[in-house]
Every structure is written in C-alpha cells, then in structure tokens.
Image (cartoon, rainbow, N blue to C red; front, top):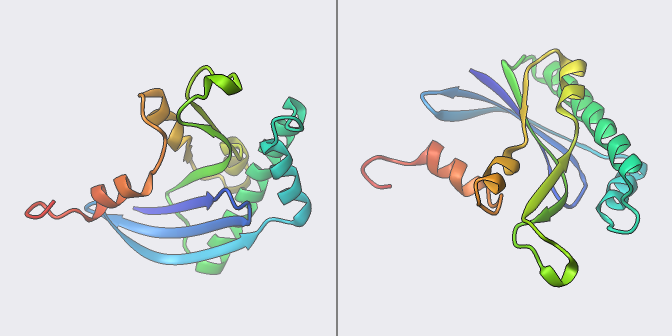
Length: 162
C-alpha cells in the first residue's frame, strides 16, 4: 500500500510530505518533499495560536487555507514523484495543545486542536484522508504526544527483542 504523510510542526515553517510503501507493517520511504508556508499564512497561523487574537472566524478560515495548501502540496508531490498514494495521512497544524490543564489559567480539561481541513485535501486530490491523530489519544486519557515513539515501536519492533 502506498501512503502519503503530511506534517507541519509548531515551528510553522511549512508542510513536509513523505510517500511510503507499507508491506507487512514495514514502511519503505520512496519520496520526500517540503514546501514552506508563505509569510502571510505563517503569520495567520501564529495569530490563531494567540489566546487574545485567535478568533473563531480567523481559525475557521485558516483551517481551510491550510487544508487547501496541504492538498496543493500533496498534488505537487504526486507529480514530482510519479506516485499516487492509496491514502493520505495528515497530522494538520497544531494551534493549541493542553495535555495537562492548568486551573490557574482557566483550563478545565485536557484538549488538543489541529487545523488543516482534511475535506479540503480530499477535494484537492481526490484521495481518501485520515487525520486527527492526537485527538484519539487525548480522548482516551493520553497526552496526545509524543506520537513518533509509538509509531516507531509498531513499525520497527522485533519480536525477539522488543
């Protein structure tokens, strides 16, 4: 199975794309590509992260902007690599993450919020998209991070050692 992964970190630098082939649970990297956010989009994302400036209307707009941006980057990666994935996995852009609520700040419950609307990626590419990876872990009582060590364990463990 060919899978494309889309990721943007809290540095808000842009979107990283990988295309991997997964057979028997072992991924094989076939292609990697990065594209930077425009300065304007980077500023808008940072504004979404600001408790005072991150309004609902701004967040909903940037959610769709990032979704379309990720979709465009995915299409570029498909053209550059010549590989069309069976599905796309998109982490999105974290704009707020509260793994341990601070009552003094008025935080009542653990939560996390990533934007980059998956439906926009589907519309841009026509490829099924899975997303909201952190949300399930937080809903189940976890911290929503780190995600990579668990993926490493699942994909690279050896039955005799791990």
